[in-house]
Length: 452
Image (cartoon, rainbow, N blue to C red):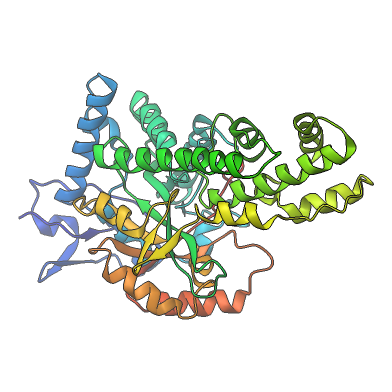
């Protein structure tokens, strides 16, 4: 008799022998549900689902697409450390906040999984081999203590090249990653209506777990978005140059001071960076005219010393920087005409629909994954989504309804909310969103070179 349900023995995953009778697996079957007969140890450990056909098919298709792209034969056996959707979703209900936090939970094996992290393929610092080595090493330690394997997802912003590299590394030495359950993932941004925002729109993010980064639809989604963002920058700067007299708006400057070289395509809300660059460049050009200096040289000199975080290089911060350097000017901090042109390239609502020169719509993401039964979507750090909405729960309900069954999770246990976040509001929101029937998950949202 074939059993396709939860099986757990103590804290260890025990493979079942299909040729043995069901009774030999110490499980009691009730209308398709398997209840382990090992007492209290079940509550303390993880439930692992025996691979369902869909999970096995996911691994098989992943191996097939890797073989096609890499031009070498990749077998499903080489990807045995990759986790599928059904196994992942079966584990989430048993996890608590401490299982996602390494702080104080490493030595006792309480830290079990991290479903949100970034590499240097987007805005992280650590490279993929470095991050994988740490995950594998911790997986070995965790397995030695508890018999469990460490679950780790790489989820770069709007980019899958890091996940591709990770899978290429894993297939070369599967044994090294035998105590790792690797979850291929991506953090996808999308523009949406936001009634508390002065722009009427904002961008939020979904975490897609158990993706196939080699599939044609996934690569097409990412490729289109990268092209949209690149074109948006070029088109906006061209229009600025044609209409704002006396200032040269150059993409190489935008790239150099607001993006990682050669092009930080991952950057959602990229339109804000274009606006910040344009306002500062125009102001410096006007200052240069009054000082009888070369505008390009003055801009390079000033920006080379303007060492604020790339996301924070705003006109107001630049004004503070000028004051610190004792540079006085009566040139206004911002220019209305520059703002007007740049805002044309911001996401906007037209006839009830979102239109954006440089962002996905929610529908773009759903269309890309609607036929992929292996992907699970979830709200990333939902508080950031909610803070720009008068009624975030109604908005979340609408997205869930329109997701064609893809949205199944919410990042209740996000570990990286900043200090200014209202924790009571976060907890209240998490409770309400979880009540919509979503499974909670968590992650460190790590951007450093150390996952632990």
